Amino acid sequence: MRATVCQQIFRLLHNPIFLAAISSWVISQFIKTIITLLTSRATSFRGLIELLFWRTGGMPSSHSALVSSVATTIGFRHGVSSDFFVFSCCFALIVIRDSVGVRRSSGQQAKALNELGMKVASRLKYQFKPVKEIQGHRPMEVLVGILLGFFIGVAVSTL
Image (cartoon, rainbow, N blue to C red; front, side, top):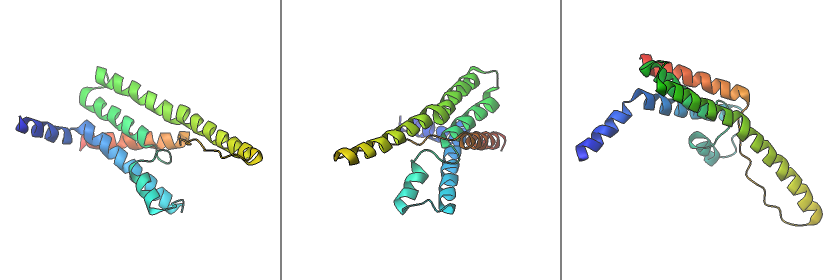
């Protein structure tokens, strides 16, 4: 049984679709961290580590890079007429639409709510606890993420 699990993990780590997905996510998060360093928007070392491994929003979209690399690699491996490719494209569209639309508008609403809450709290002398402002993506951040994922998917599929 143990050899079977190890063999399955080995196959997963050598699966081009998995490699494209992980590579696109890691590379996009790395680029995002470098851009933050170059634009002097880094506030702390801890913030940079969070950005590198976890934080959302910013250039390029790691969500868009991941789903587009998965769809691209599936297209190469199984063909663009396969059910897997159609499913991966539908999944990618949902993720991309969410990152540029729903999450972005939710973040803007949270920011407006926090500004209003702070103004009201200062006037009425009560403590206001701000809500979390989720960063969505601008369309250009999503486009760059899609292109990055596409090229990583092509590279993993053809090399």
